[in-house]
Picture 1: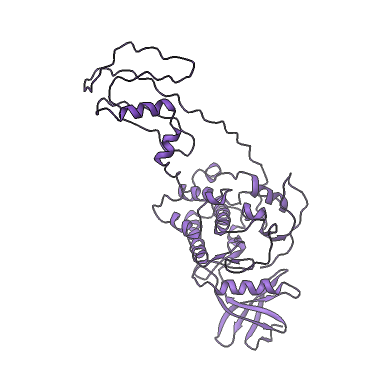
Picture 2 (picture 1 turned 180 degrees about the horizontal axis):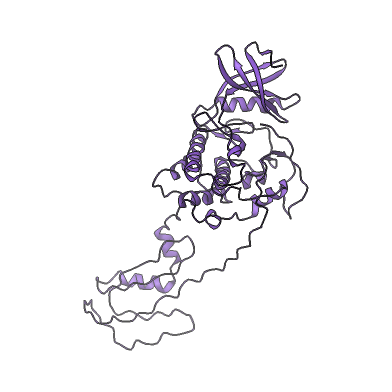
Length: 410
């Protein structure tokens, strides 16, 4: 077979890999005298999925995405001709089970984010971002490859609601639950890769595909800093942010990831958004509202600062200047009256340095107790990245053992 010319043009030199969907060959393009990668659909494999991959790759052109040169059919078998990348894969670099150098991790993360930015801007969701699908050219530049299950926003897909499709080690929680993938789903998979490069293993490890799906859906991943104190804080924070279970809590797409990776960026830490003034007023206790209302009618005077209790994610405690004036006593409890002040309050503003009149403070807001379940301890042996395509419903109970992976391919 290697001596023949495929489609009268491509001479197959060496088979680089094979799976249930396709086989990939190093080949020579005899027309343009260059080395290429030729992806040939396996017999009896899904032709429509293969064509969709070709259309997806053809829709993008970027230095961090594997480039499509040609598409055709020979002897009844469709093929794609792609840029030949000779620098190996991210899977090769992670095979040792140790963290990559931080500078290398940062460069690879930026390359992947740039490729995702380009794809997402054109309505393309990869849906299967794995170490095996990040390849390197001869100059060490990372490129996203294998858009076999990618989804173009303006086209239909081959999967219906409830179908789990992706790779179990890096799949997003929503995909693991059979929900529609979005750019935020690729962001989650990016978070898995970034965690993996920083620590040397993915956040969840198991030999069971079904258990991995359950962990991605429900388990809290460990933080990078808890496993490696010397990890770059911005990269550690970005990994945690990208691994949020709720797609709306993650960076929205590749562009958001790229901004977070810019020097000096604070996007990775993503502090809570400021609470609007109306919401802050709603959260204040009634006693505090009464004091603020009366204070607004008086002239500026002695500054009295008081803190208002807040829940997680609210704005910092409010500091308000209240003039020293005679105010009605406000009870902080419905059944306990406030004792009268031992010092008569003044009726005008004062700049005296003597101790100001004591004013009852609002009762602090009570925080709801939060119970955090302990993390599941699993083996630290790197997991495989076999593709998973199964129509089994998402797991709802304890993890199942002995599940097998269905379908694989380069």
